[in-house]
Length: 355
Image 1: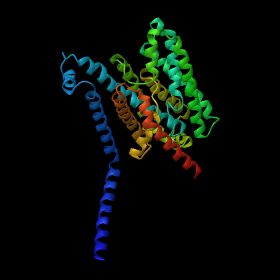
Image 2: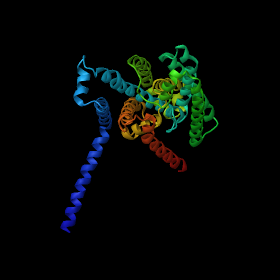
Image 3: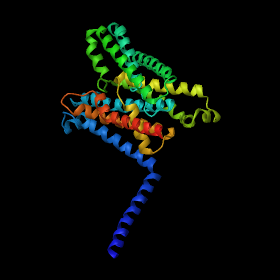
Image 4: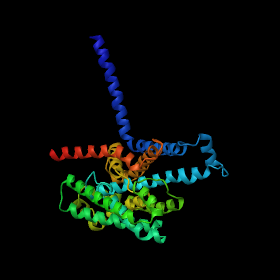
């Protein structure tokens, strides 16, 4: 009896310690979660700078020695790639969160709904028309991408009014993506030969080949959009509780929905314009952030998605760049980690609908 009591007492104390630890973590989930994301962001950024064919002493020399022969590689290749992944990864995850809020659907995202493919198609049309004439600058790419994204969103909205089942909406989005991709491949044949290799590489997705002048344009688009999205966090929280509740709280539903669509379109268009279509980030990251912080409150989710998307894309870009001797498409890596999350969300949603 005494041995059994000692056993019970020992495991009871372990259980009490674990319960206290769980309560401690729950009370401090926000600071711990954001601190963890910040540490991961710094860690992956350092790894992205350090890992590669250059030995460490040349990496450090390239970063801190102005006259180093490796400085161009470190500053204009690796560092610009890191900054691009942070900005565009956060933009893509945030765009997905806005679409999920708009459709009240946890698997809505720019790639799954065909929005990225629509943006890609419009950029390819622009390339076929203007690249041979010396066009195709950053502003033209963003405008073309935004128009393509808006057309795709409009088509998805038309479908969502008639199709209420989540699975059918996803299937329609995938079909839109396939159609746009097929037309894009056809149009690539009409692009000037000197640009076709570059354009084909862009359609695979990735953060390589971006220059600092383009990063300035990206920051000028993404940062204001992030600030505007954060300013909408209060009406967004009301909207999550239902349109009637939001209206009673003084939210202009029509203008609010337009703002959500425009901000989501701008963010996803900017990503597609510079990095090409990148799969599953817009769905996977918001879901991971909800699980990490155990909340869907926009005031938490907006910065969490921006930071989480940056971490996710930095990690995937590092894997794509270093896993094999040849660089992988980043969408191949994001799909490996993101697609299982989408499947789990769909299974959970189906179980909830059956209850």
